Length: 469
Image 1 (cartoon, one colour):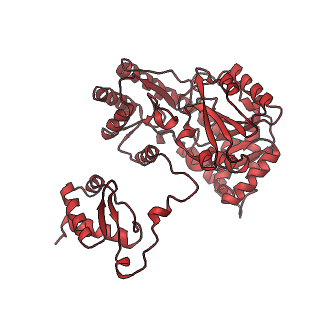
Image 2 (spheres, one colour):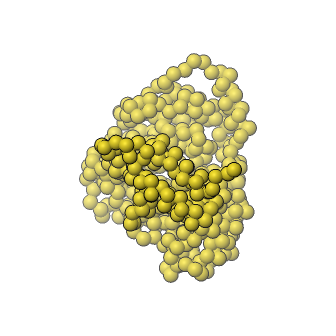
Image 3 (tube, helix red, strand yellow):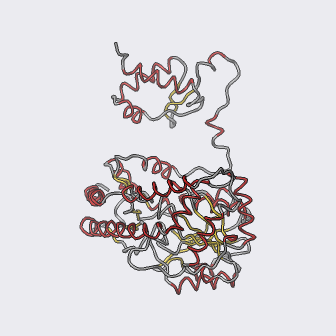
C-alpha cells in the first residue's frame, strides 16, 4: 500500500534535514515550489509542514517562509549546532543578485524558451569533429601531470599564432591559459589591483551582473555609451588616479551588441596611454562577426604593454572546454600565472591539448564558418520577429555579430512585470536592470541558443504579454 502523498513529502524533508542538506537555519523551498516538485496541491504541502512543525523540526517565520529549527539530533542535545544559514553570509565574495541567481537556475530548464543564454545552441556543437579531436589527442597521449604554470606550451604557441593573425604580436611566454575569461578577470582583480581601485567600464555592462571586482574591494564606475561604444571624453571628465583601470568590450558588447569602430579604438588607446590608464580588452565575441570582420583589436596597436587582452573558446566553440587566455606583458603574465597555480594548479590538461588541436589543425576556422552562417540565420529571424511583433512597443539596433539584441521598451511598459510574466509563460529573457546600477527600460535577447522556431514563438509570446505590463 502506497503511503499518502503528505507522508512522502514529510519523509523527504526529514531526510534532507537529517542528512545536513538543509541544516538548522535553512529556509525550505516555498510551498508553491514544493507543490510543483511533488505534483500535489498546496494544501498537501501545508499538511506535511504542519506535522513537521508539530515534531519541532520546522517553524513558519514572518517574511522568511518555513525555516528548519531542529533536526533529529539537535532535539537530543543541549548545545546548539552551527548555523550554516548565518555562515554563508560571512564570506568575502559577494553573492550574485537575486535575479541573476534565478536566471542561472532557469537557464538549466530545458522546457523554457531560452532567449537569455549567452551560449551557442547544442545544434551548433561540432560533435563529430570533437570526437575526432579527442580521439587523436587520446591516441597521442603520454603520462601527464600538472601543466606549465602559464599553460600547455603547444596551446600557448597555437594561441600566439592565432593572435598574430589578428595583428597582436605576442609570444607564447606572454600568454596565460585560464579557465575562461571570467577567471582572467578574477586573477586580475586579486593580482594587479589595489583595494579601492576604480574600474571604468561601459554602462550598461555584463560585469554589473557579477561581483568579481566588487568582492575584491573595487568600485565600478559606469561610463555612458553611444553607437560606437564607450565614450572617451566621459572617461577624461571622470576623476581617475593610478588606482584606476579601464575594462572595455569593443566587439559585439554584452549586453548591447555594440561594435566599436577603428577610430574610437585609437582614441581609447591614446587616452589610456596619456593618462597611464591600463586597459582590459575583453574580446570573447570577436570571432563571431556576421556581416564583416571587425576592426583590429585595441591590443594590436599597443606598443607599450598598456593593454591586457582576454580571449576564450567558450563563446565560439564550447564553454565546456573551459579554455581562455590573457595576453600581456611578461611580468604581468608571470604574476597571474603564480596566482592561478595557487588557485587551481592549472586548467585541465586534456582540455588544453584538445584546444591546441582545434587551433593547430585548422578545424577551429572551419567551425567558425559554420557558426557564423547559423548565427546569421538566427539573428535575422529574431530581427524579423521583433519587427513583426514588437515594433509598436520597442526599438533596437541590428547587431553585426555576437549573440545579443538590446531591446528598449516603451517607457509605459513595466520591464519587471514583463520578465516575470514571460517566465511564467515559458520564456526567459534577461532584464536590463542586472547590467546597470540604474533602472533600465531594456531587456537582452539572445539569438544564439534557441532554435529559430522558438525564437519566433518566444517573441510572439512577449507581444501577447505586453498589454498586461
